[in-house]
Image (tube, rainbow, N blue to C red; front, side, top):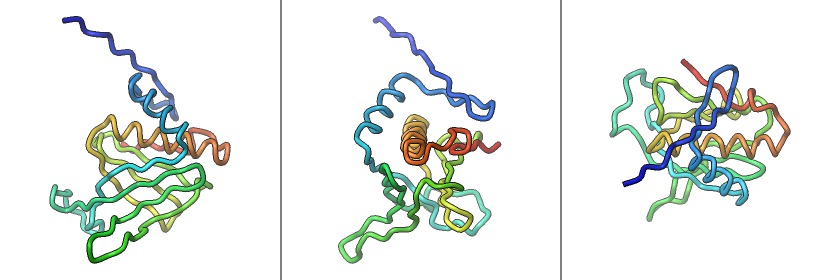
Length: 153
């Protein structure tokens, strides 16, 4: 059985490397060409507590990104309509934060009052999500890549 070599492309952000594999880059390019993408994520429903989040404390959310804005929506059910939790454009101080100690988590900050912590199923999906948001945001307002992505320790 032949194994194909894995090549990693390094994207430098404030002297911190974000490694993206070729399949991630291919998927990001396809989604950027579409211009409007939805990602299924999880959101911590009890953000006020300082306890370690458990598997039961998360609720399903849809992250909708397009060429003009980003939006996090709580999906509707049989008895309720979808609810928009956060919505904003890519204008500064908008940015996305990653966490070194948790490869499934990201934080989207629209401004000082609007931010949301999200969890995704895999590092692959997190990288695709972050790179698509960065790509659309850069097209929207020609902001430098360094100001759009922050990595916390």
